[in-house]
Image 1 (cartoon, rainbow, N blue to C red):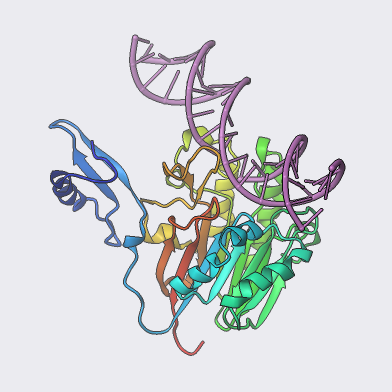
Image 2 (tube, rainbow, N blue to C red):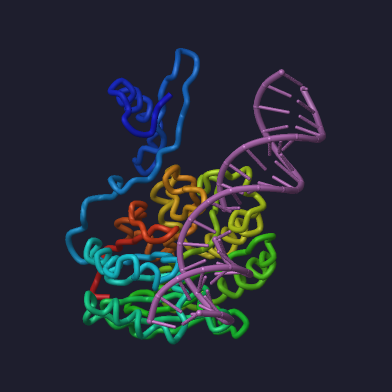
Length: 328
DNA sequence: TTTGTAACCGC
DNA sequence: CTTCAGGGGC
DNA sequence: GCGGTTACAAATCCCCTGAAG
């Protein structure tokens, strides 16, 4: 039986031999295997770690981060420079935040805390109007976008501060916090039947103009590999067949690529862990945070990564690095 | 949300 | 302004 | 009896608001 850490030398050798057969199309090692005895071979899934990241990209690149902070005030209170350091570390150009939980009246004080590390950056907020201390998204941008809009442009769906679109020369960045279907799935019908449809229509409209980078908390673990306990969560918000099929139909079948899953077809890479049960320490998580891109951008992806060691929220940051081509 | 437990099923 | 209980979300 | 599934109950976390001091 292989332990996750501290494999014995003999185990490592076994893994290398067997993993050679488990390498897939894109050349990544997708499974480690250890012969536990002469009869039985156990295969265990590989967990994503940042040492899978490719070498730093020289040459022009666009670096985008996305993080569900589960309250921006709290994140900044715990560590006022958390976001600034992230930006420095990743040389990020754009940062998309979800679940800021800000009210309009909180924005000024948050900007004041953020500003010292980000002098010339541009900040954009979309806060929930319907419910205080709930939802909310923000975009921080090194350069000034060509345009920035809030919401889907549909009154019914735009009361909870769930979406910001920032337009850049060669693409749109859509930062979204998709509605959770809630306990008892009381909002499942709204989520799947109403929001997802309007959202897909909105994305189609944008895509007709220029490529789209869609990021944020999509509140859906798409496949079994995206959740630690698929069997027991089939009726849980975020893993119902309805949500998962909607994800396929409204996003993937409409031309978006799930960049993480395309690059790492069989790697477990959660981005959310429940606070309550110490889930993070045992990696009992869900993959809810994504970068989906229009097909036209798929070839420009240099790195799609998670930063599971970054604390401060029940989600970890995720990131995308694109080659920059032309002068855009 | 996750976990534990009991009840239940088919083999 | 600070603390606390209650409620909610996930 | 065994493995798998279902259903229910209990416990756990963090952060918000609003009331009270």
